[in-house]
Length: 99
Image (cartoon, rainbow, N blue to C red; front, side, top):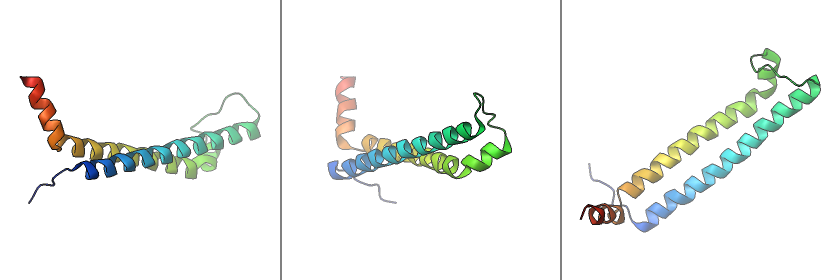
């Protein structure tokens, strides 16, 4: 299998994808927190038991979207790291530090 030559353009694409996924994660986190706050407001209490089945039903879609966004962010970060580590610039930097 041939290895990919990591050009600056490919690394920039990975970086842009990572930034896009981070925005999606931020929005998903906000939506989940809003769902939690709505549930808390309806219950009019200071404490919310996250193990409560009613809470889980009320927040399950936003929580699933949040968890999916977290996984996507981790994966995009790994893809970006792979691209950077495979780049010639990274290898040159590492070799310069060893001297």
